[in-house]
Amino acid sequence: MNGKGLKNRRALFVALALVVLGGAAAVSCYLGMVPQAKAQESTTTSSMILMDTVVDVRVDGPRSASLVERVFARMEELERVFSRFIEESEVSEINRRAGEWVEVSPLTLELVELGIEMGRITEGAFDITIGAVLDLWGFGSDFHRVPTEEELADALATVDYTRVEVDGERGAVRIPQGTVLDLGGIAKGFIIHQATAILREAQVDRSMVNAGGDISVVGRRPDGRPWRVGVQDPEDPRSIRYVLPLDDQSVVTSGDYQRYFVVDGVRYHHIIDPFTGYPARGLRSVTIVGDNPAVCDAISTAVFVLGWERGRALVESLPGVEAIIISETGAWISPGLAQAMLTQ
Ligand code: AMP
Ligand code: MG
Image 1 (cartoon, rainbow, N blue to C red):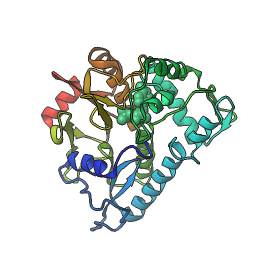
Image 2: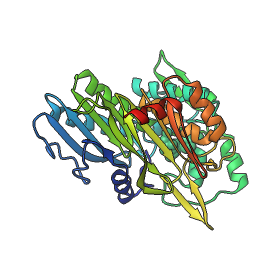
Image 3: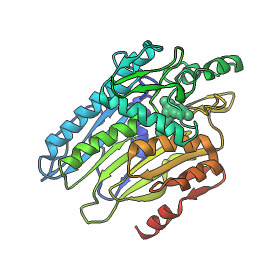
Image 4: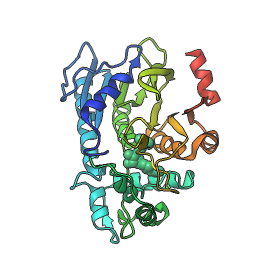
């Protein structure tokens, strides 16, 4: 949800690197929406740049072309509501009017509530009020730099998801003055969830929404087997390290190679530890598989922050959530996923 930071070239690269295997949508066009890009029988695939990445949608079933169009329109619309880098967005308004109640649409309310809930479940490793710290590091702009300890301490004082207030009756949100709401760790998952909900409701035969490797599918492949999705190797993001089966599920990955800058040989990436203000150290990537892509999105970011031991404990505590955690020295695959990978 970063308006400027990521170059399209990189997004294309990621999309190409994260190959969806086994008869899934090919990236048919990078520069705009081509609803009829590859329409044969009742399958439509199309691609568009949204949320700073290439989004591929494949739909199988009657009216697939118009459904693909609807799904892209919806995702575009939601990005304009949730991105803090789009001035007219609701999140920008919440930030501009910090300290006041701001009336928002029901979906923004739902997303903020989910963000708060994810903060609670992850004991603050996931924190939607991390915006001021991200701004110091320059994530969200093209001017990256390493902040001073003092600057970080000041920004960290504004980070506390428990201070985000939601008034369900009025449909309003209030954040403390000085706090900057950033939904970048959850909005993409939430948006692909909304897209997939449209397709489920339309009772498509099957579908796949792939936003730069964060993927939500409906159903199974035409041959009745689970979809197969490649997980990038953080050491060499052009290659695939694991192949996962995806059976009417979602998969989301957080990695230190996705958005970063290097100063004096040190890599500073975009996943911030809300307890220190620095990029979280220890892991290279976290892939989460589950039913709800918004939850997977928040959990992948949180596990990255929590690290090997506590991250693993969090995954184990969440029913229906599977993971691959990759560190410098090894990888952990949750037992349920390991089993599914063996039998795919
Ligand atoms: P992801 O790529 O899903 O792991 O999300 C990374 C994005 O989430 C960043 O670009 C920020 O917008 C935001 N973010 C970074 N650190 C955190 C954090 N600890 N909690 C919540 N959001 C974060
Ligand atoms: Mg995330």
